[in-house]
Image (cartoon, rainbow over all chains, first blue to last red; front, side):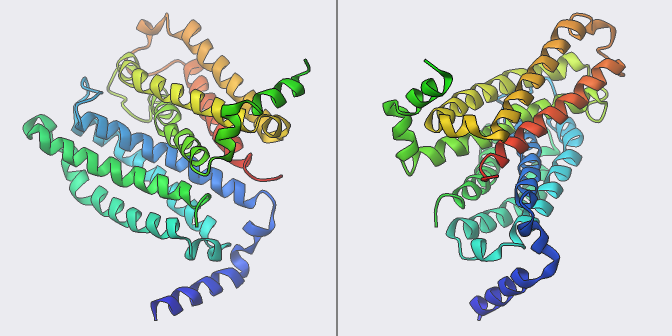
Length: 162
Length: 162
C-alpha cells in the first residue's frame, strides 16, 4: 500500500513537466546541487559552532544564548536553501532516489534531526550550559552532531551505494 | 617531464591507485572533503556576516575572528589534505576539467582577497574593530562570499561530465 503510494508519487514527479527542465538542461542539476551544498555549508557550519560551544570546546568568550540568538536566523536561512534545493534535486529524478537505501536513511535522519533541532536543541542553546552538568551538555551536543553529520554522510552515500 | 606526464606519474603512484580503486576510501575521503566545508568555508561565511554587520554587530571583529580562527584553520587543513588525495587519485582527469580549473582560479582569488585583508585592514583593526566596518572591508567580505560559493559550485559541478 505504502509502496504503491510512493510509486505513484515517483511517477507523477517524473512525468511532471514542471521539473523536467532541471533534468533536461545540462547545468540544471549541477546548479541545484551547488545551491544544496552552499546551504549545507552554512547550516552545518552554524550547527558545528553551537555544538562546540555546548561541548565546551570553543567560542568560550561568547555566551551560548548570544551565539544562538545571532546565528539561529542564518541557520534557518541555510536550512531553507538546503531543503528547497534538495526538493529540486529530488523531483526531476525521483526514481534515482526513492528506491535508494542511503536516501531513505537520510530522510529518516533528517526528520529526527529537524525534530531535535526545533525542540530539545533550541531549548538547550537558549540557556547557559554552565548551569547544567557537563555530561548533559555532552549528550545534547553529541546527539545533534551525530544526527546532522549522519544526514550529511548518508547524503554522500547516495552517490556511491545502492 | 611535462606537466601531463607528471600528473600521469602521480595518479599511478601506489597509494593514488589504491584510493581510486577502493570502494570505501574514495567515498570516505570525498565525504570528509565535503563535510569539512562546515568548518572551513562555513566559518569564513560567519566572519563575513560579521564584517557585513549582518551578525554579531555588538561584538568586536577581532573577538569573532579569534574565536573562529582555530576551527577555520583545522577545517582548511582537512580540506587541503583530502583535496590533494582526491586530486592525486584522478590527476589527469581533474586537470582537464574546466570546472576544476575555474575552482583553482577562484581559490587563488579567495586567497589574495584574504591576504589583502590581513595585510591592509588587519593592522589597522583598532580603528574599526567595534561597530561599523570600512567600505573596503565590506567589499572584501562580499568578494569572499562570492569566491567561496563559486569554489563550492565548481567543486560540485566537476563531478558532472560537462
